[in-house]
Length: 353
Ligand SMILES: Nc1ncnc2c1ncn2[C@@H]1O[C@H](COP(=O)(O)OP(=O)(O)OP(=O)(O)O)[C@@H](O)[C@H]1O
Ligand SMILES: [Mg+2]
Image (cartoon, rainbow, N blue to C red; front, side):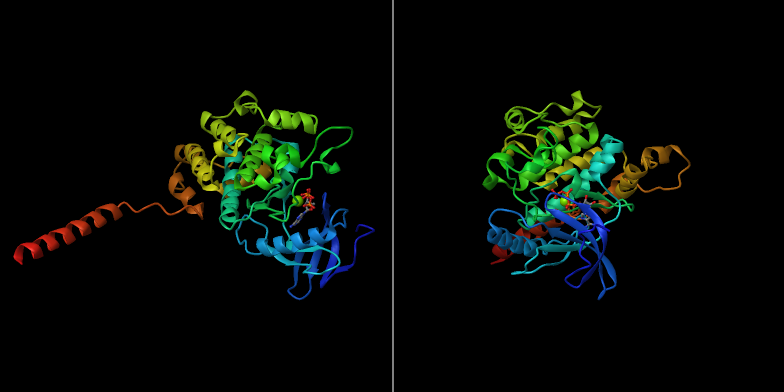
Protein backbone atom coordinates (compact mmCIF):
# COMPACT_ATOMS: atom_id res chain seq x y z
CA UNK A 1 0.00 0.00 0.00
CA UNK A 2 1.00 3.64 -0.52
CA UNK A 3 3.28 4.80 2.35
CA UNK A 4 1.14 7.89 2.87
CA UNK A 5 -2.12 5.95 2.78
CA UNK A 6 -4.22 6.34 5.92
CA UNK A 7 -5.41 3.14 7.61
CA UNK A 8 -8.93 4.47 8.09
CA UNK A 9 -11.01 7.29 6.64
CA UNK A 10 -14.01 8.07 8.78
CA UNK A 11 -15.76 4.72 9.37
CA UNK A 12 -14.06 3.02 6.42
CA UNK A 13 -10.89 0.96 6.65
CA UNK A 14 -8.41 1.55 3.83
CA UNK A 15 -7.23 -1.55 1.97
CA UNK A 16 -5.15 -0.09 -0.84
CA UNK A 17 -4.66 2.61 -3.43
CA UNK A 18 -6.83 2.41 -6.56
CA UNK A 19 -5.25 5.34 -8.38
CA UNK A 20 -4.20 8.96 -8.31
CA UNK A 21 -5.59 11.93 -10.20
CA UNK A 22 -5.12 15.65 -10.33
CA UNK A 23 -7.40 16.27 -7.35
CA UNK A 24 -6.05 13.61 -5.02
CA UNK A 25 -5.95 9.85 -4.43
CA UNK A 26 -8.61 7.18 -4.74
CA UNK A 27 -8.38 4.44 -2.10
CA UNK A 28 -9.97 1.03 -1.90
CA UNK A 29 -11.97 1.17 1.31
CA UNK A 30 -14.10 -1.29 3.24
CA UNK A 31 -17.36 -0.44 4.88
CA UNK A 32 -17.39 -2.70 7.95
CA UNK A 33 -20.97 -1.82 8.75
CA UNK A 34 -22.40 -2.94 5.40
CA UNK A 35 -19.61 -5.43 4.63
CA UNK A 36 -18.73 -4.13 1.19
CA UNK A 37 -15.87 -2.51 -0.69
CA UNK A 38 -16.04 1.17 -1.58
CA UNK A 39 -13.82 3.63 -3.45
CA UNK A 40 -12.83 6.73 -1.46
CA UNK A 41 -11.61 9.79 -3.32
CA UNK A 42 -9.66 12.04 -0.97
CA UNK A 43 -9.29 15.59 -2.23
CA UNK A 44 -5.76 16.87 -1.72
CA UNK A 45 -5.52 20.13 0.20
CA UNK A 46 -4.89 22.74 -2.45
CA UNK A 47 -4.15 26.36 -2.67
CA UNK A 48 -6.76 29.00 -3.43
CA UNK A 49 -9.91 29.82 -1.60
CA UNK A 50 -10.35 26.83 0.73
CA UNK A 51 -13.69 27.98 2.11
CA UNK A 52 -15.14 28.46 -1.37
CA UNK A 53 -13.91 24.98 -2.39
CA UNK A 54 -15.54 23.45 0.71
CA UNK A 55 -18.86 25.15 0.07
CA UNK A 56 -18.87 24.09 -3.52
CA UNK A 57 -17.84 20.52 -2.65
CA UNK A 58 -20.69 20.29 -0.16
CA UNK A 59 -23.25 21.69 -2.65
CA UNK A 60 -22.12 19.43 -5.45
CA UNK A 61 -21.99 16.29 -3.33
CA UNK A 62 -25.63 16.87 -2.42
CA UNK A 63 -26.56 17.48 -6.05
CA UNK A 64 -24.77 14.34 -7.27
CA UNK A 65 -26.45 12.31 -4.52
CA UNK A 66 -29.69 12.90 -6.45
CA UNK A 67 -28.38 11.02 -9.48
CA UNK A 68 -29.37 7.38 -9.71
CA UNK A 69 -28.55 5.82 -13.03
CA UNK A 70 -26.89 2.55 -14.08
CA UNK A 71 -24.27 4.48 -16.07
CA UNK A 72 -23.34 6.90 -13.29
CA UNK A 73 -21.14 5.92 -10.35
CA UNK A 74 -23.21 5.85 -7.18
CA UNK A 75 -22.20 8.34 -4.52
CA UNK A 76 -22.58 6.58 -1.16
CA UNK A 77 -21.28 9.09 1.36
CA UNK A 78 -19.04 12.13 1.68
CA UNK A 79 -17.02 13.98 4.28
CA UNK A 80 -19.88 16.30 5.24
CA UNK A 81 -20.07 19.99 5.86
CA UNK A 82 -17.35 21.42 8.07
CA UNK A 83 -15.09 18.35 7.78
CA UNK A 84 -11.32 18.95 7.83
CA UNK A 85 -10.54 16.49 5.03
CA UNK A 86 -12.74 16.38 1.94
CA UNK A 87 -13.60 12.93 0.60
CA UNK A 88 -16.22 11.15 -1.47
CA UNK A 89 -17.27 7.55 -0.95
CA UNK A 90 -18.37 5.87 -4.15
CA UNK A 91 -19.32 2.41 -5.29
CA UNK A 92 -16.15 0.49 -6.14
CA UNK A 93 -15.92 -0.07 -9.91
CA UNK A 94 -14.20 -2.94 -11.68
CA UNK A 95 -12.64 -3.05 -15.11
CA UNK A 96 -10.70 -0.38 -16.90
CA UNK A 97 -10.99 3.25 -17.89
CA UNK A 98 -11.38 4.20 -21.56
CA UNK A 99 -7.96 5.93 -21.75
CA UNK A 100 -6.16 2.69 -20.80
CA UNK A 101 -8.17 0.73 -23.33
CA UNK A 102 -7.56 3.18 -26.18
CA UNK A 103 -3.80 2.97 -25.47
CA UNK A 104 -4.07 -0.69 -26.54
CA UNK A 105 -6.52 -0.40 -29.42
CA UNK A 106 -8.85 2.15 -30.94
CA UNK A 107 -12.57 1.49 -31.29
CA UNK A 108 -14.51 0.87 -34.47
CA UNK A 109 -17.66 2.84 -35.24
CA UNK A 110 -20.09 0.33 -33.77
CA UNK A 111 -18.14 -0.04 -30.53
CA UNK A 112 -17.88 3.74 -30.19
CA UNK A 113 -21.62 4.09 -30.87
CA UNK A 114 -22.48 1.47 -28.22
CA UNK A 115 -20.38 3.22 -25.55
CA UNK A 116 -21.69 6.64 -26.61
CA UNK A 117 -25.28 5.45 -26.35
CA UNK A 118 -24.80 4.56 -22.68
CA UNK A 119 -22.91 7.78 -21.98
CA UNK A 120 -25.64 9.85 -23.60
CA UNK A 121 -28.18 8.02 -21.43
CA UNK A 122 -26.25 9.05 -18.31
CA UNK A 123 -25.82 12.63 -19.52
CA UNK A 124 -29.51 12.93 -20.41
CA UNK A 125 -30.43 11.84 -16.88
CA UNK A 126 -28.04 14.31 -15.23
CA UNK A 127 -28.88 17.21 -17.53
CA UNK A 128 -32.58 16.72 -16.83
CA UNK A 129 -31.72 17.17 -13.15
CA UNK A 130 -29.72 20.31 -13.89
CA UNK A 131 -26.30 18.74 -13.37
CA UNK A 132 -23.52 19.22 -15.91
CA UNK A 133 -20.55 16.87 -15.69
CA UNK A 134 -17.89 19.43 -16.78
CA UNK A 135 -15.06 16.92 -17.07
CA UNK A 136 -16.02 14.25 -19.59
CA UNK A 137 -12.74 12.57 -20.57
CA UNK A 138 -11.60 8.96 -21.09
CA UNK A 139 -10.14 8.77 -17.53
CA UNK A 140 -13.64 9.31 -16.14
CA UNK A 141 -15.30 6.56 -18.21
CA UNK A 142 -15.17 3.04 -16.75
CA UNK A 143 -15.84 -0.09 -18.77
CA UNK A 144 -16.74 -2.93 -16.42
CA UNK A 145 -16.23 -6.59 -17.43
CA UNK A 146 -20.03 -7.01 -17.59
CA UNK A 147 -20.16 -4.44 -20.41
CA UNK A 148 -21.54 -1.72 -18.12
CA UNK A 149 -20.31 1.81 -18.89
CA UNK A 150 -19.96 4.06 -15.83
CA UNK A 151 -19.23 7.80 -15.74
CA UNK A 152 -17.32 8.99 -12.68
CA UNK A 153 -16.55 12.41 -11.19
CA UNK A 154 -20.02 13.69 -12.02
CA UNK A 155 -20.51 17.34 -11.21
CA UNK A 156 -17.88 17.27 -8.50
CA UNK A 157 -15.25 17.84 -11.16
CA UNK A 158 -13.60 21.17 -10.79
CA UNK A 159 -14.15 24.03 -13.18
CA UNK A 160 -11.22 24.29 -15.53
CA UNK A 161 -8.51 26.64 -14.44
CA UNK A 162 -6.39 27.63 -17.42
CA UNK A 163 -3.36 28.06 -15.21
CA UNK A 164 -3.67 24.52 -13.86
CA UNK A 165 -0.28 22.93 -14.34
CA UNK A 166 -1.76 19.45 -14.69
CA UNK A 167 -2.81 20.38 -18.21
CA UNK A 168 0.78 20.61 -19.36
CA UNK A 169 2.87 17.46 -19.30
CA UNK A 170 6.64 17.18 -19.72
CA UNK A 171 7.83 20.26 -21.60
CA UNK A 172 4.93 22.21 -23.00
CA UNK A 173 2.89 19.31 -24.37
CA UNK A 174 -0.78 19.65 -23.63
CA UNK A 175 -2.35 16.70 -21.80
CA UNK A 176 -5.63 15.74 -20.21
CA UNK A 177 -8.83 17.65 -19.77
CA UNK A 178 -8.46 20.67 -22.12
CA UNK A 179 -8.11 18.44 -25.17
CA UNK A 180 -11.70 17.30 -24.59
CA UNK A 181 -13.06 20.68 -23.51
CA UNK A 182 -15.14 23.08 -25.57
CA UNK A 183 -14.18 26.67 -26.31
CA UNK A 184 -16.78 28.03 -23.88
CA UNK A 185 -15.44 25.79 -21.13
CA UNK A 186 -11.90 27.11 -21.62
CA UNK A 187 -12.79 30.76 -22.04
CA UNK A 188 -16.15 31.43 -20.37
CA UNK A 189 -16.72 28.95 -17.53
CA UNK A 190 -20.02 30.68 -16.68
CA UNK A 191 -21.35 29.68 -20.15
CA UNK A 192 -20.77 25.96 -19.50
CA UNK A 193 -23.95 23.93 -19.89
CA UNK A 194 -25.24 20.52 -21.03
CA UNK A 195 -24.00 21.17 -24.56
CA UNK A 196 -20.44 21.52 -23.22
CA UNK A 197 -20.70 17.89 -22.07
CA UNK A 198 -21.95 16.95 -25.55
CA UNK A 199 -18.88 18.58 -27.11
CA UNK A 200 -16.64 16.59 -24.76
CA UNK A 201 -18.54 13.41 -25.63
CA UNK A 202 -17.78 14.09 -29.32
CA UNK A 203 -14.09 14.68 -28.55
CA UNK A 204 -13.87 11.47 -26.49
CA UNK A 205 -15.44 9.41 -29.30
CA UNK A 206 -13.23 11.02 -31.93
CA UNK A 207 -10.14 10.21 -29.87
CA UNK A 208 -11.30 6.68 -29.03
CA UNK A 209 -11.72 5.89 -32.74
CA UNK A 210 -8.64 7.62 -34.10
CA UNK A 211 -6.16 8.04 -31.25
CA UNK A 212 -5.85 11.74 -32.18
CA UNK A 213 -7.73 14.93 -31.33
CA UNK A 214 -10.29 16.84 -33.39
CA UNK A 215 -8.56 20.16 -32.70
CA UNK A 216 -4.88 19.23 -32.70
CA UNK A 217 -2.69 21.57 -30.65
CA UNK A 218 0.59 21.52 -28.74
CA UNK A 219 -0.13 24.43 -26.47
CA UNK A 220 -3.13 26.07 -24.86
CA UNK A 221 -2.79 29.08 -27.20
CA UNK A 222 -2.82 26.82 -30.25
CA UNK A 223 -5.81 24.91 -28.88
CA UNK A 224 -7.83 28.08 -28.35
CA UNK A 225 -7.04 29.19 -31.90
CA UNK A 226 -7.97 25.76 -33.31
CA UNK A 227 -11.24 25.71 -31.34
CA UNK A 228 -12.32 28.94 -33.02
CA UNK A 229 -12.06 27.19 -36.41
CA UNK A 230 -13.38 23.84 -37.58
CA UNK A 231 -12.45 20.35 -36.39
CA UNK A 232 -10.55 18.00 -38.69
CA UNK A 233 -13.28 15.74 -40.18
CA UNK A 234 -13.22 12.32 -38.54
CA UNK A 235 -13.66 10.69 -41.95
CA UNK A 236 -10.32 12.14 -43.07
CA UNK A 237 -8.61 10.29 -40.20
CA UNK A 238 -10.43 6.92 -39.96
CA UNK A 239 -12.98 4.90 -41.86
CA UNK A 240 -16.43 5.94 -40.67
CA UNK A 241 -19.95 6.14 -42.10
CA UNK A 242 -21.31 9.50 -43.26
CA UNK A 243 -23.99 9.39 -40.56
CA UNK A 244 -21.57 8.81 -37.71
CA UNK A 245 -19.07 11.36 -39.01
CA UNK A 246 -21.87 13.94 -39.29
CA UNK A 247 -22.97 13.27 -35.70
CA UNK A 248 -19.44 13.60 -34.30
CA UNK A 249 -18.81 16.78 -36.29
CA UNK A 250 -22.05 18.30 -34.99
CA UNK A 251 -21.06 17.49 -31.42
CA UNK A 252 -17.72 19.21 -32.04
CA UNK A 253 -19.09 22.52 -33.28
CA UNK A 254 -17.53 25.57 -31.60
CA UNK A 255 -20.91 27.24 -31.29
CA UNK A 256 -23.06 25.39 -28.71
CA UNK A 257 -26.19 26.34 -30.68
CA UNK A 258 -24.91 24.33 -33.66
CA UNK A 259 -24.51 21.14 -31.57
CA UNK A 260 -27.32 18.67 -30.82
CA UNK A 261 -29.46 20.33 -28.18
CA UNK A 262 -29.98 17.39 -25.89
CA UNK A 263 -28.34 14.06 -25.08
CA UNK A 264 -31.56 12.32 -26.22
CA UNK A 265 -31.08 13.75 -29.70
CA UNK A 266 -27.61 12.19 -29.72
CA UNK A 267 -29.11 8.89 -28.60
CA UNK A 268 -31.62 8.93 -31.44
CA UNK A 269 -28.84 9.41 -33.98
CA UNK A 270 -26.78 6.65 -32.33
CA UNK A 271 -29.73 4.32 -32.39
CA UNK A 272 -29.77 4.68 -36.19
CA UNK A 273 -26.07 3.75 -36.38
CA UNK A 274 -26.52 0.76 -34.06
CA UNK A 275 -29.59 -0.54 -35.85
CA UNK A 276 -27.86 -0.29 -39.19
CA UNK A 277 -24.97 -2.33 -37.78
CA UNK A 278 -27.57 -4.77 -36.45
CA UNK A 279 -26.35 -4.52 -32.89
CA UNK A 280 -28.86 -6.36 -30.76
CA UNK A 281 -27.09 -6.32 -27.43
CA UNK A 282 -25.22 -3.21 -26.31
CA UNK A 283 -23.50 -4.89 -23.38
CA UNK A 284 -22.23 -7.76 -25.53
CA UNK A 285 -20.87 -5.20 -27.97
CA UNK A 286 -19.12 -3.36 -25.12
CA UNK A 287 -17.73 -6.60 -23.65
CA UNK A 288 -16.22 -7.17 -27.09
CA UNK A 289 -14.38 -3.86 -26.71
CA UNK A 290 -12.65 -5.29 -23.62
CA UNK A 291 -11.81 -8.69 -25.08
CA UNK A 292 -10.97 -7.44 -28.57
CA UNK A 293 -13.47 -9.94 -29.98
CA UNK A 294 -16.53 -9.00 -31.97
CA UNK A 295 -19.81 -10.43 -30.72
CA UNK A 296 -21.93 -12.18 -33.33
CA UNK A 297 -24.19 -9.44 -34.62
CA UNK A 298 -27.73 -9.99 -35.85
CA UNK A 299 -26.71 -10.06 -39.53
CA UNK A 300 -24.25 -12.85 -38.84
CA UNK A 301 -26.80 -14.69 -36.75
CA UNK A 302 -29.36 -14.51 -39.50
CA UNK A 303 -26.86 -15.99 -41.91
CA UNK A 304 -26.13 -18.78 -39.41
CA UNK A 305 -28.76 -21.36 -38.38
CA UNK A 306 -31.31 -19.31 -36.44
CA UNK A 307 -30.63 -19.74 -32.75
CA UNK A 308 -31.76 -16.27 -31.75
CA UNK A 309 -34.79 -14.90 -33.51
CA UNK A 310 -34.89 -11.56 -31.67
CA UNK A 311 -34.99 -8.64 -34.03
CA UNK A 312 -32.15 -6.15 -33.54
CA UNK A 313 -34.59 -3.27 -33.48
CA UNK A 314 -36.73 -4.75 -30.75
CA UNK A 315 -33.87 -5.78 -28.49
CA UNK A 316 -32.00 -2.51 -28.84
CA UNK A 317 -35.12 -0.68 -27.80
CA UNK A 318 -35.38 -2.98 -24.78
CA UNK A 319 -31.93 -1.87 -23.60
CA UNK A 320 -32.94 1.72 -23.94
CA UNK A 321 -34.16 2.88 -20.61
CA UNK A 322 -34.91 6.54 -20.81
CA UNK A 323 -36.15 7.45 -24.28
CA UNK A 324 -39.80 8.42 -24.16
CA UNK A 325 -41.82 5.36 -25.19
CA UNK A 326 -42.96 5.48 -28.78
CA UNK A 327 -46.63 6.50 -29.19
CA UNK A 328 -48.62 3.27 -29.75
CA UNK A 329 -50.03 2.94 -33.30
CA UNK A 330 -53.63 2.57 -32.04
CA UNK A 331 -53.62 5.85 -30.11
CA UNK A 332 -54.34 8.26 -32.99
CA UNK A 333 -57.35 6.32 -34.47
CA UNK A 334 -58.82 5.81 -30.97
CA UNK A 335 -58.61 9.54 -30.20
CA UNK A 336 -60.08 10.39 -33.66
CA UNK A 337 -63.01 7.97 -33.14
CA UNK A 338 -63.58 9.44 -29.66
CA UNK A 339 -63.71 13.01 -31.00
CA UNK A 340 -66.02 11.96 -33.86
CA UNK A 341 -68.39 10.16 -31.43
CA UNK A 342 -68.62 13.22 -29.18
CA UNK A 343 -69.25 15.49 -32.20
CA UNK A 344 -72.02 13.20 -33.56
CA UNK A 345 -73.66 12.95 -30.12
CA UNK A 346 -73.55 16.75 -29.69
CA UNK A 347 -75.04 17.19 -33.20
CA UNK A 348 -77.83 14.70 -32.43
CA UNK A 349 -78.66 16.46 -29.14
CA UNK A 350 -78.77 19.83 -30.92
CA UNK A 351 -80.95 18.38 -33.75
CA UNK A 352 -83.43 16.72 -31.38
CA UNK A 353 -83.88 19.81 -29.18
N1 LIG B 1 -15.20 4.37 -8.15
C1 LIG B 1 -14.02 3.88 -8.47
N2 LIG B 1 -13.78 2.53 -8.37
C2 LIG B 1 -12.56 2.01 -8.68
N3 LIG B 1 -11.50 2.75 -9.08
C3 LIG B 1 -11.66 4.08 -9.19
C4 LIG B 1 -12.91 4.71 -8.89
N4 LIG B 1 -12.78 6.05 -9.10
C5 LIG B 1 -11.51 6.23 -9.51
N5 LIG B 1 -10.82 5.06 -9.57
C6 LIG B 1 -9.41 4.86 -9.96
O1 LIG B 1 -8.65 5.94 -9.46
C7 LIG B 1 -7.93 6.56 -10.51
C8 LIG B 1 -7.83 8.06 -10.21
O2 LIG B 1 -9.11 8.65 -10.34
P1 LIG B 1 -9.28 10.23 -10.31
O3 LIG B 1 -10.70 10.54 -10.61
O4 LIG B 1 -8.71 10.73 -9.04
O5 LIG B 1 -8.30 10.71 -11.45
P2 LIG B 1 -8.50 11.09 -12.96
O6 LIG B 1 -9.92 10.88 -13.39
O7 LIG B 1 -7.45 10.35 -13.74
O8 LIG B 1 -8.14 12.61 -13.01
P3 LIG B 1 -8.92 13.85 -12.34
O9 LIG B 1 -8.29 14.08 -11.03
O10 LIG B 1 -8.70 14.96 -13.29
O11 LIG B 1 -10.37 13.44 -12.21
C9 LIG B 1 -8.71 6.22 -11.76
O12 LIG B 1 -7.90 6.20 -12.89
C10 LIG B 1 -9.23 4.84 -11.45
O13 LIG B 1 -8.26 3.88 -11.82
MG1 LIG C 1 -11.61 10.97 -12.41
